[in-house]
Image 1 (cartoon, rainbow, N blue to C red):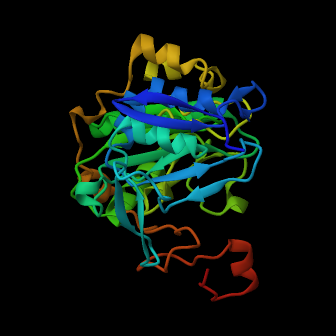
Image 2 (tube, helix red, strand yellow):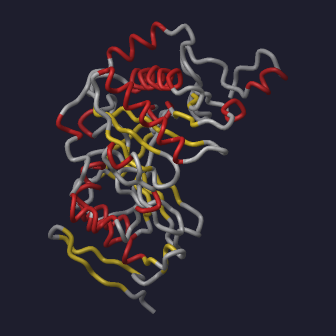
Image 3 (cartoon, rainbow, N blue to C red):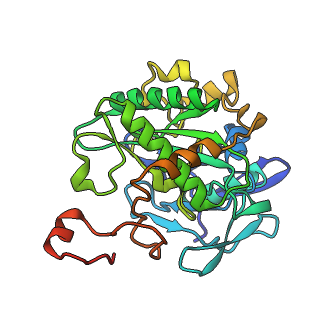
Length: 337
């Protein structure tokens, strides 16, 4: 027996939504149809964040309580949906989703895509990022309130650099601050800039923030994940729904709103009304791109040098020993992942 379906019109295209009444978010009873319609309702903002970026799909075809499928390679798709070839740190390649219209986002949502995870480089030049990502991640024992405090320290540092950052909730307890940068530095250089920035925030945060890569060294602090600026690393895009039973979303906010907002207030049922009223509060992000030269000077002047990469990356020149400190003490000289 054929699955039930509906068809919706999105930007002149017809998108088929199968099993529209399947409950995807049990805490609020939200369905697959609501998920697809949500992405259409905030489509202008979601597309602005994803346009021309290789984008990975985090799919839950049976709802958020089912196991996730994190898909870097675009599945079989209509010819009007565009892809872009990306190269992983391993050297392998794949054709990833490259959003160019809202209908493509809606089509992927019908596949059970909850989260969209874009690169921080665009298709015209995939070797030079145009976004510096400040990922503020509360560790066990800390909360969104501590993340918010660190975010405002980050804003202070950005101000001293003459740069502007655009904050959004992660959809959980964290905060992302995105900074548009000129696409003329490599992933390695942008990552170095992120390390220098994170260290300065750490220095100014009165013990609240940390750049420690190893969890055993972080303690009850807020981690600034500099590695989100490495090639092939992604975070949930603006307006992306998160795979949580309550269907919270990664919500772009102003700095004034960040001062007292609650990330639980932004979900697939509240965001469409907010978007209809305010539009995309990050629509000015592309008005100006910044240079990272000063941050690179900070990095070069810092005798501590590089920090570890994630474990799936090849060993990088100048990278310190990539093994937990406790294991390194047990096995001196072991610098392999």
